[in-house]
Image 1 (cartoon, helix red, strand yellow):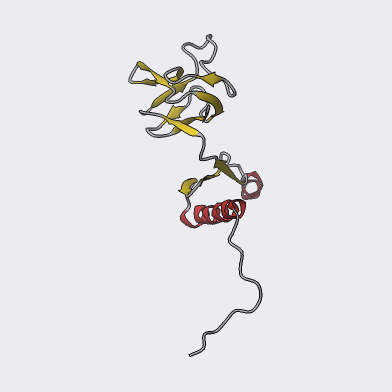
Image 2 (spheres, rainbow, N blue to C red):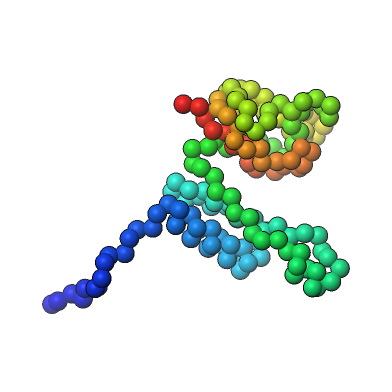
Length: 159
């Protein structure tokens, strides 16, 4: 029995960039379908976070349509190490309001170096780096509340 054959060149496997774009599109569609504000997924060697940012409720429906911002997609390199919040609390970048921040983006840190403080139940908990490397991104604003497991920093480990 003869098998049907496709004519033309074989379909090429999608590249990493094409996979990222396709995954981002699917996640953006999922946000709308499920009325989510944010979704993050890791697939193979890529990690994508898509977040819907909406301003405070405007006075008129016409202003509402004009005020809604586009989706924000954030692709994170798998080589970066994520430092996550070990508890719920308030994130502080410095030991006091007048002190310099513990770290800035681009700073080189050592394993065990203090990166920030999380205040929980009136206790100040120092959060230390779990690897040595360079601070690639600071993901939380000073004074904002954080949840358990929320990403705080991305560190590019040094070889």
